Length: 94
Image (tube, rainbow, N blue to C red; front, side):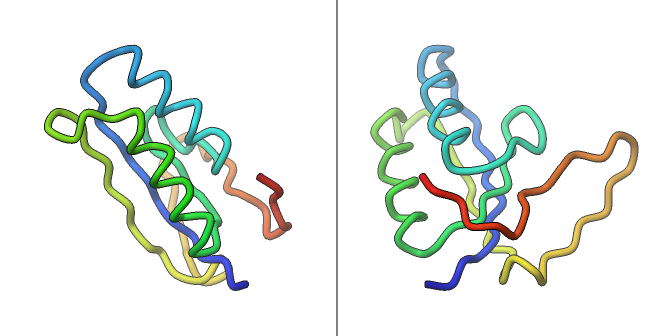
């Protein structure tokens, strides 16, 4: 199954929900900044990640944005300042 690179950022209003969402995101991707993750996922993995995160959210207070950056080898990043590591091309077992 083809993997795609996604940028996922969130704004969670309550600290306990924030920790739960953060812990979930850490299992699916690499932290790029405090509330921003890069995740190389199949479509199925994306569905599972989204469902898991939504269980922790209050949809009328919190928000998440998912940006499809395309195939894992096609997404390009430019860093200014400290460079953050991006996920490797290797298969990731969740």
